[in-house]
Amino acid sequence: MKRYSVFAVAREAARYHEGWERAWRKATPKKKYDVIIVGAGGHGLATAYYLGKRHGIKNVAVLDKGWLGGGNTGRNTTIIRSNYLQDPSAAIYEKARSLYETMSQDLNYNVMFSPRGVMMLAQTEHEVRGYMRTAHANALQGVETRFISPEEVKKLVPIIELKGPRYPVLGALWQERAGTARHDAVAWGYARACSDMGMDIIQNCAVTGVRSENGQVTGVETTQGSIHCDKLGIVVAGHSGVLAEMAGFRLPIESVALQALVSEPIKPCMDVVVMANTVHGYMSQSDKGEMVIGGGADGYNNYTQRGSFQHIEETVRSLIETFPMISRLKMLRQWGGIVDMTGDRSPIISKTPLGNCFINCGWGTGGFKAIPGSGWATAEMIAKGEPGPLARAFGLERFREGRFIDESVAAGVAH
Ligand SMILES: Cc1cc2nc3c(=O)[nH]c(=O)nc-3n(C[C@H](O)[C@H](O)[C@H](O)COP(=O)(O)OP(=O)(O)OC[C@H]3O[C@@H](n4cnc5c(N)ncnc54)[C@H](O)[C@@H]3O)c2cc1C
Image (cartoon, rainbow, N blue to C red):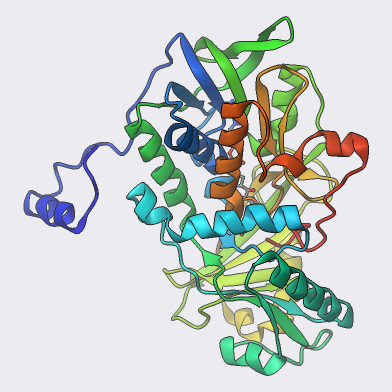
């Protein structure tokens, strides 16, 4: 595949951009692969990429029932941070954050990583104590964060109202090297790199059954026929329970709709990401100028991939307390995705009761930031048959053994 570069852009400009090749090949399923990954979201594609890049396993197919990146990967609000409290979480999210820093060069695809800084507002005394504790934990984990004063918050975010009617801003947990990236570009960049390694990315190919013999996986049934494989990776986020049922086991996962919205574009007014967990909402400004606002998750299980008005109203009403200027904005559009929530709000990267069948799920409302680290860890587990250091704590057995990774700062709702 031809490399993207400034020279390529100049060359193609001279010939009316008619020479660009497809970013990834259109593929039809072969009879058999060494590894099949179900789910062409960021986590599935990153897993395939690192299988090829780090472990030399390239006879791989990534199957998706829709279009690649059309699940949560293309629906999130793109916040990337690694300021988690528990050591296993900080390790995998920090690995991911550091991989994001070099992802554009690594994939030869501009994923627009923007390390603009993420702040989590402390608006109650309880939050002040919690975030100070997290800042101390992060220092021990080698994750750069610090607790900042309300004055520093105001300096970084001039549009904020520090003395809101219900909750004043008492400070914030600030991670300067956190930020955002372009979500579709992450999926497209990985897909292009996988295709370049000879892997098949097969869209519109829903998996409808998992085949096994003597307790070992042997392949999948799909809407494009049966495909055999030696190893299977299930990476389907909100549909994990459905795929697990096909493979004959149950997961401690609940699927709910989570939604977000964007405003009309306005002039640049906020160049960091702000999360306000107490009033429940978070906001950043996109490169186009839209205010990107994250809303809440539904309080009941469902598979509806769309938003609902009561959450929008709730989120905007709360955020206006901290950002009064948004009351004058028109909202442009809203959408939803189906997220997969575990009881301890931590992911699952694990072997399963079915031999050579592996699962990656449970990222809930906050897995975009984890994509490269998760792909790295899942590829290692699939290649070696056992979870490596990054994945070990996230096994399914923790639910049986009561070894939860109780990540209260993680993505209960905020991302
Ligand atoms: C509104 C919203 C805001 C969010 N904001 C953030 C944020 O700011 N920061 C952050 O870190 N995270 C955020 N998240 C969470 C993040 O988007 C997800 O954790 C992450 O994208 C999950 O990626 P994935 O690759 O596991 O899943 P997905 O991208 O959902 O991919 C799974 C794929 O599996 C496919 N699939 C399902 N069933 C089948 C089948 N039977 N056969 C074949 N294919 C199948 C689907 O079509 C889909 O493409 C947000 C999520 C939402 C919905």
